[in-house]
Image (cartoon, rainbow over all chains, first blue to last red; front, side):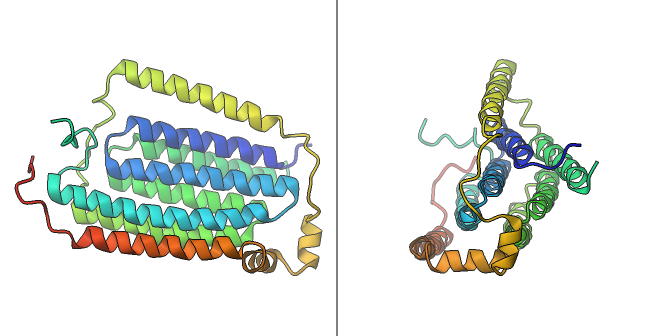
Amino acid sequence: MITLEPWMMLVVSMIIFCIGLLGVILRKNLLIMLMCVELMLNGVNLSFVAFSKMHQILDGHLTVLFVMTVAAAESAVGLGLVIALFRNLRTVDSDQIQMLRD
Amino acid sequence: MDFGLLAFSIFSTIAILGSIMVILKKSPVAAAFSLVLVFFAFAGLYALMGAHLVAALQILVYTGAIMVLFVFVIMLLSQDEPVNDLKESSGLFKGVSVLGILGLMGLLIRAVLTARGMVPTGTLTDEKIVSMGGNVRLISEGIFTDHVFHFELTSFLLLGAVVSTVALAKRKAVSGGSKA
């Protein structure tokens, strides 16, 4: 009889992290790239909680609270940057943003 | 099959399929709604591990605040026409990145599986957490005693985020910038 164990959660968290990383590399839309960063942060949060369960301490849960705060601040500033870029360049495609190259 | 394992397989399948949809969907709104699905599945996984406070905050903060922000920005920029930007990059680049990420995933899973037989270093089993007043009480005590310095640093981070967002929003559009 198999029961639920923390290492299964760790495997899921690593898979989600890698999918998010792949999205950041492959996509060109800045909004979707930011969403994939959120996905990566969520994968790491899940591994914090799973390690916390595995070690029978609660410090992982506290770390998750701080990571959530950082994620909220990061998405607010990141979306503000995307809006500022869109106002100047009329695009959210990361390949079109090449003012430093010209 | 016990209940925990059944719920775990349902939630993790939803989470993995939803996150694959996030990176494959062409329209940003569809990607945002797949991401909401992933966040709800994550809340279920947290609840399965007994992290009730984290599960509640996941729904409140992520699906309640961050995703509303994302959908609002998509609406503001009216960026809902589907763009197939996955087709633009070359096949070699895509193949190499997929292979690299698969290798990284294998390495990470291998590393995580070595932690399977680990002896717990703490003493807070589920029964002990309940007898000490529950998850929420222990986490709150931890924030305001051991981690109070990090808590104060977080307030500085949020202050900095507010100031920088206001500074970004106030700036006028660069005159003469390329309007391509």
